[in-house]
Image 1 (cartoon, rainbow, N blue to C red):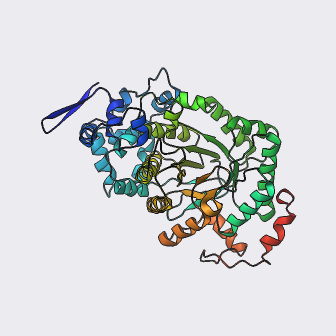
Image 2 (cartoon, helix red, strand yellow):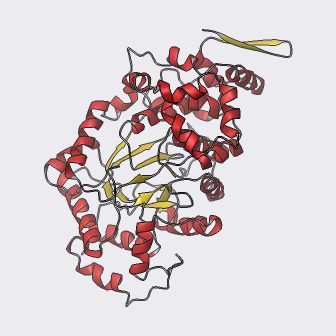
Image 3 (cartoon, rainbow, N blue to C red):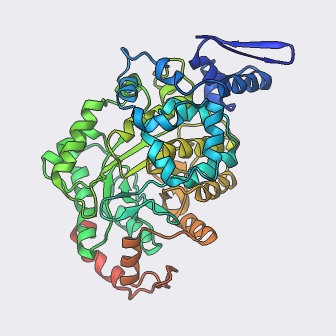
Amino acid sequence: MPYQTTVGSQVYRFGDLKTLLAKASPARSGDYLAGLAAATYEERMAAKLALADVPLKTFLNEALIPYEQDEVTRLIIDRHDARAFAPISHLTVGDLRDWLLLDSTDSATLSAVAMGLTPEMVAAVSKLMRNQDLILVAKKCRVITRFRNTIGLPGHLSVRLQPNHPTDDVRGIAASLLDGLLYGSGDATVGINPASDSLPTLMRLWQMMDEVRQHFDIPMQSCVLTHVTTQIQAIEAGAPIDLVFQSIAGSEKTNASFGVSLAILKEAHEAALSLKRGTLGDNLMYFETGQGSALSAGGHHGVDQQTCETRAYAVAREFKPLLVNTVVGFIGPEYLYDGKQIIRAGLEDHFCAKLLGLPMGCDVCYTNHAEADQDDMDSLLTLLGAAGLSFIMGIPGADDIMLNYQSTSFHDALYLRSVLGLKRAPEFDAWLTRMAITEPCGALREIGRGHHLLKQLPFVSGAA
């Protein structure tokens, strides 16, 4: 179905909904690389005007990637909740923007319609919104998940403690783990990106983290970010796995390039549930996404990268995850060229995921060859904190020595909590106070060599 609008004396025509969405997207290098972006600012604005008039019902009838060809499309259509959609079914995309910004559209209202929204609807409305609109609406969304602690409560911010090591040295990982705990980080998860895919090496990592957790009775969950099929094997071998991790994308073809499918994710989810390791809840999946992955894998089907990204959230939503994380600037400047594009993408991803009902965090990061620096990341970090971000990364010095990119540090989490008055997960906060790491008010205590955590850790066999 063609779409068109007139700007002055110029008539702009867009051949289909896929083209219209791409042309309406804020400028980013990935869409230019794919040949999908608007050629001029005027064409982009014309596309936004035409998109604003598209009824939401259109997205249920015009699939961007054919239903017969793509299991993600089938998931989106088959899981659509018509009852939840009914209160907003008469709206256009522009009307949806206005409705989202109303004071009367509160957290409960947004939660009630979440399953009635498709990723394409949410991506479309984000393209009409200013940064402040994305922040305001995301702030109203409430997504709370639980495993051994509670993530996503209003006024809270969690941290994934990321103690990576380039050779998977257990002592080096334990040192980073200790460093993070003493800075009050780790309530989202302790998640290691391993350098090796050797199952014996990975088993040692799972066992070490679980032994530390049990020895100090820490209300946390751990994760090793290896391929999901390896995690299934590890569960069968008796590994103490809390969270199951996998990178996902918004098309079947891209997920296949990652070596996964909905069936494999379901198998992993059921295997982890069978372990019954959660004490407060059974949200146990951890997904990572990022704009540009579909284009990089040749699986975008002519869909713009932000809409592809949002479609990945339908995959995540199917498995009720504890954590979802957009690794926003990790792929590189071919997809998000500079600080401005990375900031916009981070706010879009957070808004879209929260509106769809996901517990969204962000790896506020960039690669060293992007036109970005730590000041850009400070800006995005602060904006996402204001928007109600669920969690960020905590990496020693913000410099990942295994993955070789720039992210956020334990100090960045302290900054954000101090400036915005954000708290840690309550169960984790209570543990920090009990361990004399923080004061009852949440402030860090000065730690000396005689602190019992420092004394005991070397005697934990996995960390020795």
